[in-house]
Image (cartoon, rainbow, N blue to C red; front, side):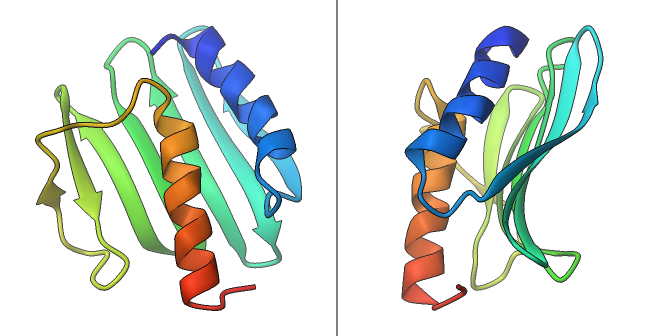
Length: 117
């Protein structure tokens, strides 16, 4: 994943996913981005990616607390399951070539199944 590709995916996500209400880019540098994809007040997806370190964090946040997430650190993905977001479950298969879209599809399922909106 390259930074420019992720930035395109972030903006495409607003058009592709019905539950994304607004995109708030929080911070962008030459090699990193941190963005918030607002779902509703108090519920959003936070995205962080550093091209230099390769760190990629995707989190569904409710009330300032992660309720679901996926992270790539040191080249390996792990999952913070909805049922217990404090856990780090390894994900040996990794993520699709478009991890943001895969994550948002998972978030959509969580939102529907748990009636979050």
